[in-house]
Image 1 (cartoon, rainbow, N blue to C red):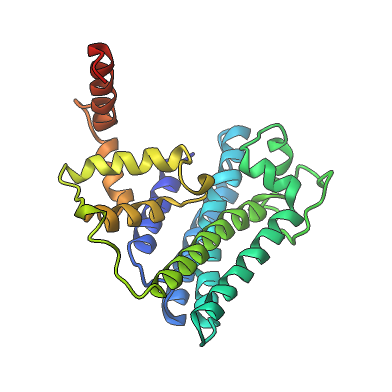
Image 2: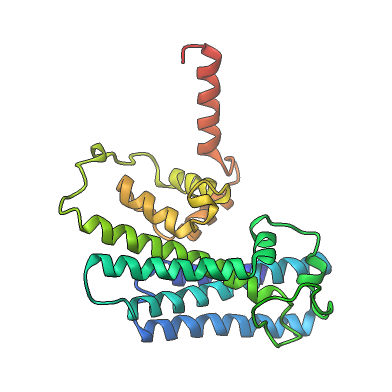
Amino acid sequence: MKTEFKKIKTELEETLLSDPDVASSAETIKQAATLIEDALSSIRIDVVKNGFEDEPDEIAFFKSYKPELLSLKIELIYRYNLKLNEPVGTRETVIKYYEAEIKSIQSFFRMNSFHYQYFKNNLTHMDAVYFVRNAGPLALPTDDINDVDPKFSTPMSLLFAKFKGYESVQQFSLQQISSTGNSSSGSEPKEAKENMRWTGDSINIVELAYGVWLTGQLNNGNASLNQIVKWLEVNLHVNIGVVQRRFIEIERRKRLSPTKYIDQMRDTIRQKIDRGNS
């Protein structure tokens, strides 16, 4: 993937994901959508003019890169509409509202179950058909309308963007159910959790966050990196900041291993095993 494409994506994520209120109003949604559209327009000009180095590069772009950008727009607009239409009433009413939305999302996944399983299992055998332009019609058409720009879309790029975006909205809905349900207990969380705090270097928790996210350890792999970071910050009383920017610190390590802290954990666990006094 071209370095300039990755830079645009990283800058866009830093701008949008660092603002917890980005989906709070029509104006902020409009601004966010404009940023995403401007980024895609800029990238489209490059793609149409210069193309890709080879077919694997084209597949990587339409399978991962473009869907990730589109999914940000899909998620933000969906979340805004959810909050806008959230019913005024009892906690039970609000919970049922979000439960119904989760069912609607799961229904979409079922309607596109063949392609959703391809997405979830990160399969590759149909990539040359799904993610290469002008590859011809799909043997199994999707239930959804796809992009109509033959120079900047493939049969599955928009659908993959919706899978990513809708999964994030599903997690957002679960969070709303959880926070609404917790507010009904009438009691604060126990002081709890023994007031555990992260006292190590914050960059170490960035390694942990990426490790948990990339290996799909939370919510069957559906938790987003941003959700994991927020959970760690709240529960461990630590300020991580914009995690994508902090990851750049890890990437730039020269003398140290990029996974310095995880390596340290591995080594100390092995030492304990070797001592045989578990």
